[in-house]
Image (tube, rainbow, N blue to C red; front, top):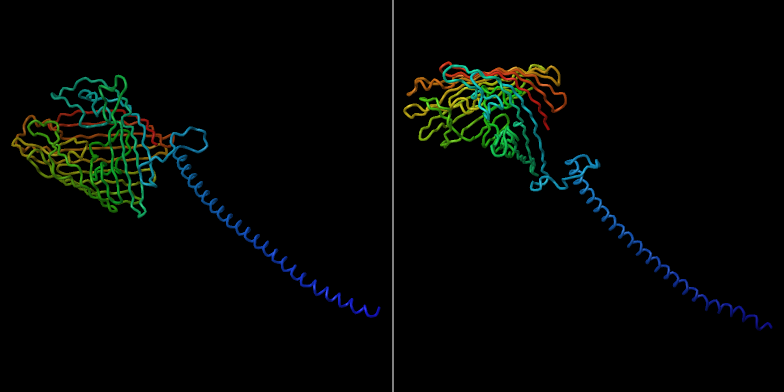
Length: 467
């Protein structure tokens, strides 16, 4: 019994020695299994993170695309009307499909009804004449024998001076500014085949302006650089102060730098014959363009402008020169009043003054061409009674020096126009923004060299809506 006891501790030690390495080996396998599991989870987490990043990038790209599309849709909706108003759309793409990206399109104009009653001393103005639509002093009748016919007043209605314009503006990345502009009205005359006052009162579309500007340059048709449009008074008539204002629209190339501008403009000479005082005929044989220059000073007080004109006058093989100057401006007299004025003088000024009331040049009996001197001007006072109600008083005059010393001056020459003048007074009311209702009374007179005169009295009303 005593010999067996030492065996038990030895067996226990041997057993423990045999089991211990197994236990150690078992823990190492478990750890490896866990490490493998952790690595697998880490790979899965990394894959999920990469997928999330890709998904986020896709989401951001999609959001940017949606925002750009929404912006384009908003632009179209703004151009067509307020979004969500339930109205059908006729425009689903940019208006300027052929324009530079980022171009801005604009449209405007007005609708104008003119109604007038006219009384002329020496017979009615010819039906279909421009003088039946607005005040043209050259159309005032003056009878040949001095006997004044008994003519009743006559009334005319028309909407021929309604107009519209379109413009496209664009600025390049370098800051260059461009504009294309075109404007038309309905003062193109009627057509015997398409309509007249008997039935449809059809009028043709007339080009007023068509030009492009690039920074300081202008090319195309617009107001002559010799004309100060900003000095014109507010008239119910198309112009009102016709005799005293320069008024020409024509093709030109113009350069403007600050207050100064210079232009080369379309040349055309109007010529009358001294022995017959025939109505002016146009000579289209000019070689040199008309040269105009203008300077404008502006301030809170208003503006002042001085312009010059140099011309070649030509008819057939005969030619001479002409030069003229124009001073004009507007003086503000407080918040409710201003004075607008113009004074013009020079040789060869005829085509530029009073719708060509006088000729640029005269052809004498020897076939020699002489420039004709003319002068004209106007003054107008504007007073605003209220922000909606204002009035204008205007006086306008033009005179021409018909040289009686020219060869061939004779009895037929006494019919040449010596002078024209007119007075106008109006009242214009704007009950709503952009809506004008006006009435104007006018008196005009045309006088010839032989002292014969014809006058015009007119009541002119209008309704005009601008947009």
